Length: 301
Ligand code: PMP
Image (cartoon, rainbow, N blue to C red; front, side, top):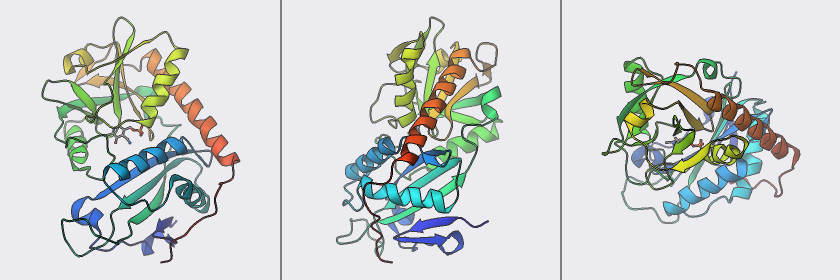
C-alpha cells in the first residue's frame, strides 16, 4: 500500500513525492532531521523532538520556516492519513533548492519532507534476546550534537557491524572511549551499580530517549555517572544498553564478541525498557488527546 508523504506543502502518494536534484540536502547533506516514535497512533515526546529540530536548524543558520507549533499538526495529519498505529515519523528539512553553489542561498525556502514508517517499536522481539555490537572509530565531524542527514559514517559503521555478524556498532574516540552508537546513545551499568553514560557535549547527539532514561533512574537503585567510558570498561560491564526513539531501551548482550554478564538482557535494562516504553505510551496518548493549537499552514506548491 502506498504511503502518503508530505513534500513542501503537499500530501502526496509516495510514488509522486519527489525532490529536485538541485536540493542542497542531496548535493551537500545541507539538511537536518528528526524522528519521532508513534505509539497507539499518537506521537511521543513531540515537543522535545521539535525543540531539538529547531535547535539543529538554528545551529546551521537555517531561516525559520515552520515553528514547532506549525510542524505538529502536519505530523499528526500525516500519521492519521497513513493510519499509522505504531512506528516512526520523520521530518527532513534541507536548506532548499538552488543551482550548485557552496554558499548559502538567499531568499530560498527550505525543503520540508515528512514520511512515516510502520515498525514494531515497542513490541520488538529483538529486545527479548538483546543485540550484539562491535566498536569502530568515530570518524564523524565535530558537531555530532546537530542532527544532520550527514549519516554516511553511521551507515559505514552499521555495514561493518553486519559484515562482522553483529547487530550494531558503538563508536569510540581517539582515547578508546565510547562516544555513542551509530544511531543511539550508549550506556553501561558497572559491577558496583552505577549507570555510566557519556556527558552531553558536541561529541554526541543529545538523545531525547537518553533524557527519559535518566529521569527514570529515580525508579531504580542505580547511581548516575555522566562521563566517558572505555571499550574495556564496556566489555567488563554488568549490563549495557542503547537508547533511541526508534528502539527505546535496547539491551546489549555482546560487545566485540565478549558476552556481557551471562549474555542475556540485564534486569536493569529490561526494567528501564518497560518504564521508558510506558512513559512514551503516556506521552503519545496525551498528544493524541490534545488538538493542535494552531491551524495548518500549508505552503503553496
Ligand atoms: N545518537 C545518534 C547518533 C542518533 O542517530 C540517535 C537517534 N536519533 C540517538 C543518539 C538517540 O537519540 P533519540 O533518543 O533522540 O532518538
